Length: 96
Image (cartoon, one colour):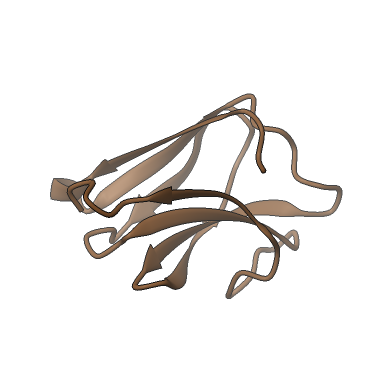
């Protein structure tokens, strides 16, 4: 489980969103947090999170998204999730 405060803001009319954080704990040594947009249970990388507070990542092409997840990954990120999921937000019924 990821400690700190995370907020997800999605603008369906703009087909985009942001992940905001405050005092998010550092990932384990030699690892990064990676964002994933979930569509029909399939992950699509939204990139590696930057920083611990402020805007941590941008989400694009979210019109068909049903969730957003964060996993722990190698420093350069992964093509598919390999590490544990430390946070997830369900977007079903959120207007996307």
